[in-house]
Length: 433
Image 1: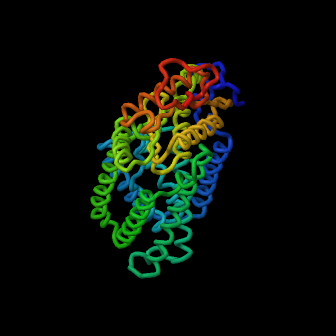
Image 2 (image 1 turned 90 degrees about the vertical axis):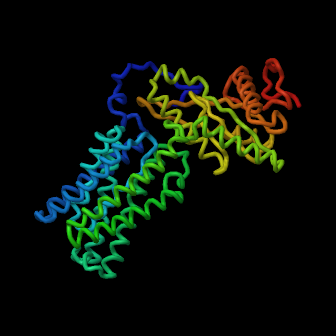
Image 3 (image 1 turned 60 degrees about the vertical axis):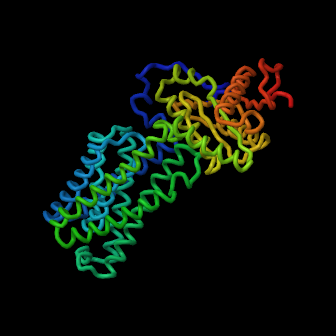
């Protein structure tokens, strides 16, 4: 049920609620069905593959060696640390060789110990996410393994360096990447239907990383097929690449808010200052919005801070999905967000703010069988109308937000050329020009 007011309120039974003990049950029903379906399919395929496979000691040794290499990479990650928001690794460099060199059942099993290590040694996250990741990777690896055997027949042919086995291996690696990305993207889109598909599929950076992982996986598979001891030579370069990748992600994470993935206040201010200097030089219009979630404390008090975090993530995702690539969006702290709109005049700024208010008002976050809806208030400031630097624009937008709250919330307030010193007449949402 979506409450008609700013938030839907229902008595909260502390941490004893079912969704509190089983966070998966607090997600949208289609998402729960999808996640459970993928995991059930992975289990069924694993049982079937195990029954159809002949286990050999050589295969088991290869499997153990590749998983051990993955564990070493995870240990290197643990020593550097991996905060929330840093999600990419190079573990496909070990999952792909398992899929290419061994029977399909090993590809289904390989992600399980490594995901457990990630959960225990690197960063704890919701268990159902780890389980789903294992299932998605396992199914993708199984499909690649089956296709490789159909195309090549004997996996040992990869070690000869022949053109056909290597070509098939590359195709299977692409299949692995596409299937795994698609399975995860569907789950991400179901969790937030307002998100754009391009946000949950590939961007230029993620595509580049996938290509790197694909190449590493095929190279490691060839080396492992020639001689298992060559893994000793392959491991250090992969660990070094993973550390370099992690360092780059940590630098990016230092600029972003851990909960929402938006720019943090310091990074937003740096980028906003740069854009304002450019706009002053070129004479282009520019607008600034301050957005605040109405009655957010009520959400935290009623449902708890974990649910409040889900609301923050939902609002942040909706903001990002409704703005242009070059708009600058950040979280200023608490339930307050700030948006810089290059090229936007007063009319455009108000239109964008109203669109954001409307879309967030239709957003719903599932919890305990209920649906939480929230609204936002927004204050607008336009460059050369309300100020000429960031401090002036923030001050005017903040005062405009205060007026929007006074007028009843769930609205946008656009002041005139100079903010009035007192509250505007009731029913007015913009000062007279």
